[in-house]
Image 1 (spheres, rainbow, N blue to C red):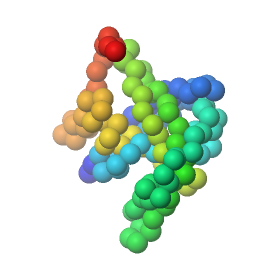
Image 2 (cartoon, one colour):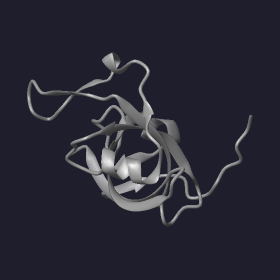
Image 3 (tube, rainbow, N blue to C red):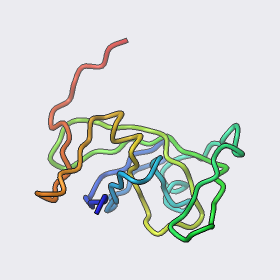
Image 4 (cartoon, rainbow, N blue to C red):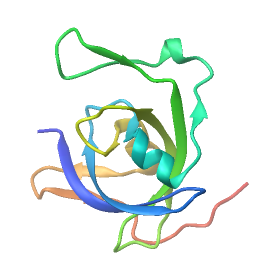
Length: 128
């Protein structure tokens, strides 16, 4: 098993939405369904979509992404803020998937023995 689930609050330029996210260490990038992404933020075209062709769980099946969205997300028990680019898909098994790149960026770890997602509980000072 390389996935765990947890409720998060997603924040974008148009609003917010609380959703159950799948934290998947096997997913390269963070993914979001188009209807959810569009309801909370403006979508941006991916400048080089030919480099965003993804394999799916179905052998031999690929999906090309053409848009992305920048979102912030938060956990209920943490004052820390996490943000990243989410790749937008029309069809996806889950509404939100937090992928390995985002988890590595923010030091989010998956503890499969305890079935917990580990992350910062306190905000840190941002530096320029």
